[in-house]
Image 1 (cartoon, rainbow, N blue to C red):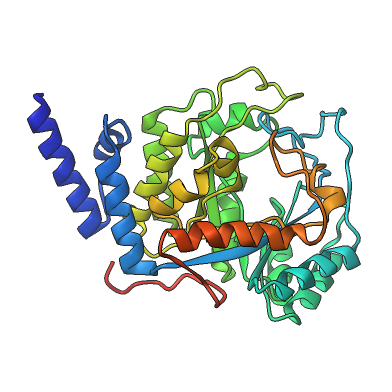
Image 2: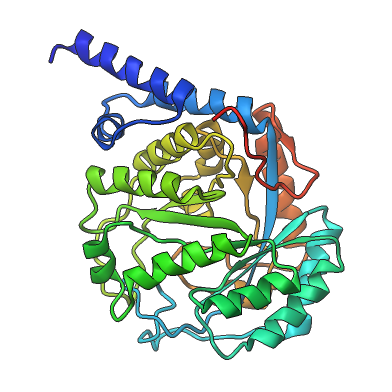
Amino acid sequence: MKNREMYEEAESLINTLETEHKLSKEDLVKLLTLNDAGPVFEAADRVRERFVGNDVHLRGLIEFSSHCGRTCLYCGLRAPNKNIKRYRMESYEIAECALNASKYGLKTVVLQSGEDRTFRIDELCKIISEIKKMDLAVTLSIGEMSKNEYAELKKAGADRYLLRIETSNEVLYKKLHPRMSYKNRIRCLYDIKDLGFEVGTGSLIGLPGQTPEILADDLLFFKELDADMIGLGPFIPCINTPLEDKSGGSVDTVLRMLALARLLMPDINIPATTALGIKDSNGYQKGLLCGANVIMPNAGMCKYKKLYAIYPGKDDGTTSSDLEEQIKVIKAIVFNLGRSIGTDFGYRKKSRTI
């Protein structure tokens, strides 16, 4: 196909996505592999502004336990890793971090951990109930559970649940997640949705064995699920894992996925992830220009931040005022792009036009 014909085809596909918000797997692959993705990024930014506006929502991340019973090949917190120091925050410490986030104007906290079953459901429910008294939305990212357990967390006041699929390809999923069930992961996502949570999921970009076709399937999976939030970050190889010597994911591919997710699902929340900011010093800016509308500063305690070693390069923390500094830096980025900081809870506002 001649260059002019390729350009015209790409232009037509982008226009279809921007106006109809749907595309075939084959055509998504074409956009994922374009020589120049600039027009895709520009279309995603227009759609972002039209459907979710210029607000960037800040969500305070509290990583409350680094204990995990899983063996995911890419993650530094995997159970077989005996070379890291584990920690588990006390309930009052989690509440203190949430209160601090509230004082700095954040409207959501994200409670994240490895799959640490030491925290009982009743204990988690008490923590959630305490945080809800602070006029905060609560997002949970604590792994796979039974539907009854999810229901208890929802009853306690949790608003959102983030459970990343990492890859929707069952064969690749099984290779990367020993002794885990792909079907159970899917079951969890649909249970969460059925219970009324806002559902978050996402993919790790650049995993060994991943292809443009698999990434296109991921996008279609997100749309079929009707996820409310999609997190897309680069794979960053971590020491003391089976994948430590593999190549990491590319920023360009992450941005393409982010932009296509925005075009396919125009009214959802999409973060410019921490991993994107680590991989590229301008990662937050680039993400926000490709459709992102959420950033998650770390609201945890300094003594624990560096111990949550899911991948190298994470902020090792300073003091509690570090959150203030993070917010200051983020605001400068946001304002420089002509955007604003969201002042509400940032729930998905589903559009009736798609």
